[in-house]
Length: 226
Image 1 (cartoon, one colour):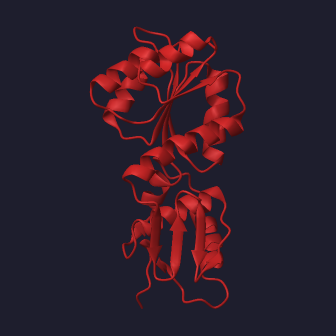
Image 2 (cartoon, one colour):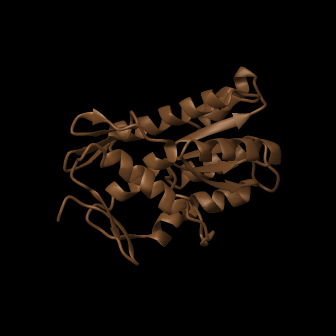
C-alpha cells in the first residue's frame, strides 16, 4: 500500500514509518496539517494515517473535513491521545473511517490499515494478478505458481507485484528504485540485484519455465514469451 502518515511527534512518526516500511508498504510523511493536506491533494494514497492534534493553522480533523469536502474518499485512520468516546465520535463524524487511541500496538495498526484497504478493494479494485501459471492474491498476500505456494518476504512481494503490473514490459532499475524502494536517487548498492536473484530463485524454482528475465544493460522483464 501507498500510505500517507501525518504526525507531528517525531518519535511516533519514526516508529510508525519504519514499521510500515518493514512491512513492505510505501510511506510519505508530513509533520503538519497543512503539509499533510498538500500531499493528500497532490498525490493518490491507499490509506492516510492522520494525527488529531497537529501544529499550524489546521489540525487533523480540519484536514479530514477539507478532504471530504473536496470529494476525496481515501480511507483515513485517525491516531489520537484523546480517548473519550465523544472525541472518537467526533473524529468519525468528521470523515474518519477508523480511530485508534495512543498508545497503540503496532500489530493492531497494521490490522486496521489492512481492513481499511480491503473495504476499498472489495468494492472496485482488482484483488488478484496473474500471468502464465503465476498468481498473486493481493488480499491474502499469497503467491502461487502452478498451484504451489511461493513464500515471499514483504519486499519481495512488493517487487513481484510491481513486475506483474508491468508484465511483458521492460522495467528499469530507476523504476524499481522509485516505486519499490521509494528512492529518488541511486544508492549505489546491489540491493536490486540481490532481491531480483532471490525472487527468481523462488518463482522459477524446480525447473519451472523461467518467467523473470534480465534485459542486459536495460532492466528486467516478467514474461512467459520466449
